[in-house]
Length: 333
Image 1 (cartoon, rainbow, N blue to C red):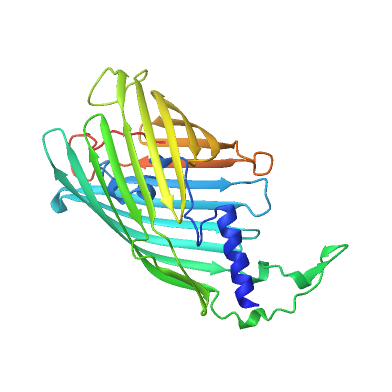
Image 2: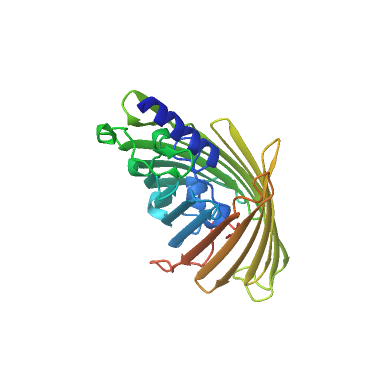
C-alpha cells in the first residue's frame, strides 16, 4: 500500500508541475527573481538588492500551487565578487499536501575578460526540506459510489514516520556580458539529492539546466549615467530550461518607456505551446513592482485560470561611497 501511495503522489506532482520531485517551480518574471534563475546574478546590481516574489499557479483548480521567494545580494570589491542569500518555498496540492522549502547561499566571482566583456562564475549551496501532509491524502477505500469521499481510510498513516525529508543541494552557473548583450547558464541539483518519504522508496531530484541569452538596446536615452523619464529601450530574450526529460523554451520582449516596462513572452515545449505571458512593471527611485499573468493556451485552457505573479525589488544605496554604476544592464521584470 505504501508503494502505491508514493507512486500516486509522484504522478500527481509530475502531472501538475508543482515540482517537489519532478520539476522545480517556475517563475515567469525571470529577471525579477535573478538569483533563482542563476546564482551568477549575485552582485550584478553592485549595491544591495532585495527581491521578493510570489506566484499563484492554476488558481481555478483545487490543488493550486503557490511559490514564494526572498533574496538579498550585493557586490564586494574585497572578495572580487557578489554574495547572495535566498529563501524559497513551494506549496502544492489541495491544502498544501506537498511542501518544499530551500535556504541558499551563493557566491559569484567576477572576471574582467576585456575592457568591454565581463564574466561571473558562481556556486550555490542549499539546504532542502520536503514535507508530505498525509492527512490530505485520499484513498480508494474512502469513496462511496454515490456520495464520493465520505469514509475513513483503513490505511495506517501512523506508520509513515518519514513524512519530512532533508538534503543538501549544489548548483553552479556563469554569466557573460557586455554593455548591451548578456548570456548565461545554470545547473541546479548537481548532486541529484535523494528525496524519500518512505525508506524503501527513494527518488533523486533531476538536474535542472537553464540557459538564457538577451540584449538591451537604448532607443532614446538622455543620460548614460542614470535613467530619466521618457527613456526608451528594447530587450529581446530567450530562456531554455530542461529538467527530468521535460523542456521549455520562453521567448520574449520587454519594451521600457521609463518608468514603465511592458513585456510579452511565449512559453512552449518542442511539441506544444503552453502559455502566453504578459507583464507590466514600474519603478520609482529605489523600488520596482512587477505583475505578470500566464494565459494558458494549451488543452488545459478552460481548467487552470492561468497564473498570477507579483515581484517587488528594493535597490538600496551602497554602504561605501561609489559611482552609481550597475555591473550588468538587463531587464528588471
